[in-house]
Image (cartoon, rainbow, N blue to C red; front, side, top):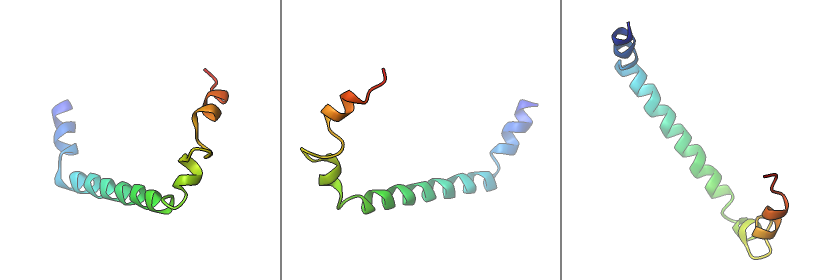
Length: 61
């Protein structure tokens, strides 16, 4: 039974779909990096929104 399931899941159409999904996720991640590139100083700068003092005060653990 497991061998039949393995053979069914390794057919080429499943591998093509997984590859296309991986490419789509990569495009989405690159798009997010590009739209936030201009805001990097605002977010990650010395006085940015994401810094150690703010992160330590908002930790719940």
